[in-house]
Structure formats: structure tokens, C-alpha cells
Length: 94
Image (cartoon, rainbow, N blue to C red; front, side, top):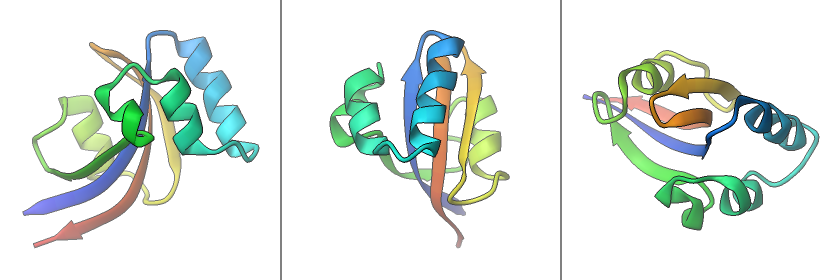
């Protein structure tokens, strides 16, 4: 069973997602940005989704989480919920 430790930021606007990504890449704290801007319930945890299993996330996000590079800021990725910035902190196979 594949699992991953993931954190993310969800916003409604692609331009805002791109601006937040640049801030993070320029050294802004991911946790603080998530708490301030993310519309997901995970915002109160700094964007931490914790451990997720393959198939638990919406398909476009699930595919990225289980095939994208670790410790890289991905996105913006569009889903039916808005635009996501994601970081795969650690992925493991059982």
C-alpha cells in the first residue's frame, strides 16, 4: 500500500496560487502561508494533510502525490475545489 506525507495550500484563484508559490520559493514559510491563505481545513495545521493513502485524494492530486518528486513544491494544480500547491514530504510503499 502506498502512503505519503503531504502538505498543501488550496485557493480559488490561479493567480493567487502562483503568487503564493513564488513567495514560498523565495523563502516565505509554507506553514504561515497555508494558515493565512488556504481554504482547506488543513490550514489550521499549516497545510499538513498528514499521512494519506493512494486513492484518498481527488484523482488529479492523487496522481501527483504518488508520482511527483518528493520535497518539491508542485502546482498550481487545478481540481474541482480550486488550485493546489503541494509538497510531498515523504512517500513510502508497504
